[in-house]
Image (tube, rainbow, N blue to C red; front, side):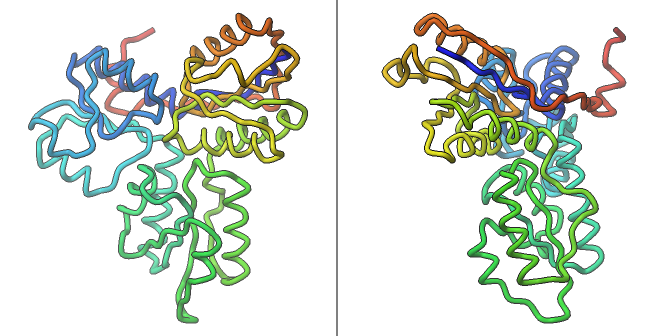
Length: 312
């Protein structure tokens, strides 16, 4: 079996920062540390932290007053921050800076009287947090059909923002439709889809052209991982999104196959290597890593965690 290992893949700077933040909070304050929503959308990561004493919650009311709390990489609304303050929670914010950028853009446009069209997936943690910044000013747009049904007065000021983990192609289709219908719509100076999402999509798009099967490591609730699987399947190639090798069926593979492996931005490298080992063991794999783009982005820890970080 010929195995192509895509690079870049796996953890992005925002995920690395969030995981380091939770590790450090557990070390400093001990268990339990409460986390509002999953720290990142990956079952391996979540389960590892549960074993260390992290407790993941979906409501602030689930957290005892005065406890230690970490906000996940996906960001939260002002309402959630206020609820945490009201319960006197010792809160640390591991929101990805690229998500924070979208929040700040939403606040800016809302203050300037714009109606904001947020391109994203309903119910996603990031979308909920962004919409919470200016709920009266934001309309969620999930696809081109929604765009075609929108209607505004001629003097309505419009701007669009996007969820950071979208498919670049899907977002561009919606943006093109928005610009067609509303030529004067505003957009932020820099696009919102994150560098890591774009780089991983570019790698899968290019490297999946000449393979028989695509395997994406990531959890089902990971938006960016779902987009990678969809890209891998675009040309009719079988593409699987799996948490780890235990999700694979040997009957779907053979020694003669060419397989592409990549991983979503919240999937640890350990599950990538475990999947390669499984393929090697069962199909005598030969691995070649192909790098499409280099990455060197790093995000600092939250300010109030930097103060307690042990010196190296």
